[in-house]
Length: 192
Length: 182
Image (cartoon, one colour):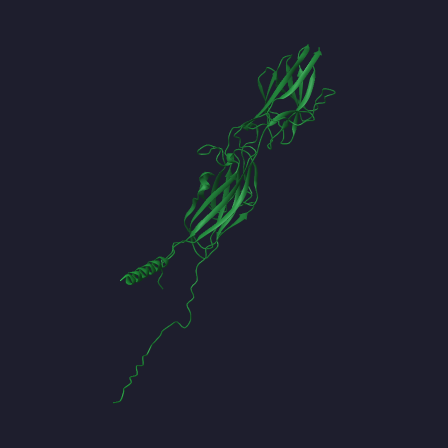
């Protein structure tokens, strides 16, 4: 009796891409640059009714389109300039933002293109939460030329013998931190 | 039986954990740019002071008199702009504790010469005691002062009394709001 041995040889086939497929993620970058004094230079000696316009360029510098540009302003310092104790505040500082399709002349306030109001004059207390500036899409590489107007509302205060009223807005200082924020465009599914 | 139940339990836990870990993340990327800026407000005000002194804030400026004279007698002081804005005018109220009427006169553009009683500038009335509030368009630049003479009136000045001078400045006595670009 002879023992039999079987041989089972199997064949395997493998397919793969000879060259690895490159996959890269997009980038989202928002940068802020002064146009003139911008935010780098302090605003001082504001009288009631004064409006100080400062200019900044906001660049969506990544390679992804963005959406939903917002602005929030956090403030510290004199409460008289921030909330003034009334609701809504009538004496405290306000901020407005206007965009120029061209460029701003930071000396004259003239826009070479058309202007769009992105944010009406808004109290600092309302700006403690983010307010929408541009709800729609912002293309990659786009630059928003912004005029940021800081207003101290007009008011009637009388100073007697060099002493201001108890709730004065005179001689006060507030530090404003502007935070612009955008989100990436909506994620998509593509076929190609 | 217990061993089988235990093994099943471990398997179920592992599967549940792997399902949780396999959840894709949909957190959107945010772009943020932040910068800070200091904002300061101006001030306006004025107060009386002796010719060589500093104003005492919050209280009227007081002149003391002790007189026996038949002629008008004068004292000189200054009104200091205590704010950071130029003043276009002020409102003066003078109150006497007794004695004769005291009239206030500013010397605009110059300083009263106390020795001669002369003013090389123009004289502007700031009212008198008992006359209520007087608003004068006497400009005082920020950091500057206005020279003022207080003078008794009438033929007889007799006794010891005081004159308290209150200086008020309203919002309308500084420049209007402006729009600046920079």
